[in-house]
Image 1 (cartoon, rainbow, N blue to C red):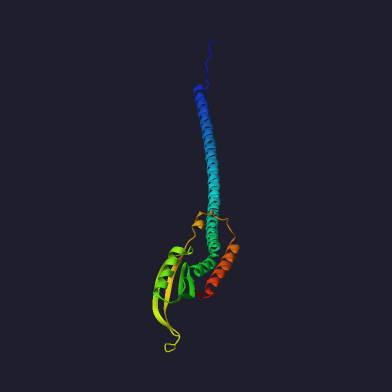
Image 2 (image 1 turned 30 degrees about the vertical axis):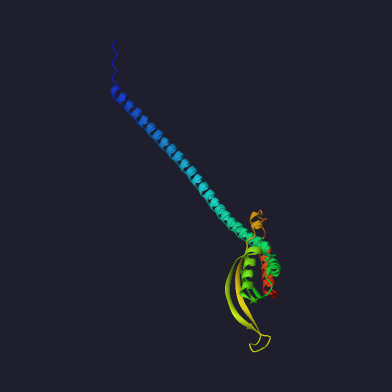
Length: 227
């Protein structure tokens, strides 16, 4: 017996294929959306990580800038301390200089010369006095330049004739008033000495003031040297 299928099998197959296509399309769309979301999340995580690294680098740069400023301030303080230390070393080196200058002037000032004034400005010493003759002044200049250990490069500033006492008096004497300039020697031993330890700012300032006052007072209060 022959069986004939009268159902619309072609239309049913077409509908089934259509449903399969729509389902596959929906699945593909969902998969694409999921992939897009995953990519967006991954990119967002990378951006956040990079922003975190940038923030860390910026914070470290700020810390380095602060440390650099501190180092610069420390260097300035070190330079200031070194300057104070050098000033104290110079004052300690020169604190016995007035006594040495006076002692050598007493020893090497020739007879016939009277020193009336001794003045120091920095490393320059000016001597003012009277002499019996020009030859005595020449001897003094030679002594200042060759024999004295504390002074060097003597230079005659002025010499002029004068009368000691009243011109009409019987005991009036003809003398020569002179002014001599010399330079204080820088001790060679001080250059060979190792640098002293750093000193505090307050101690350096106090020591400098004390030494400077002592040296100035010693030279300013120098008494005339008579030979």
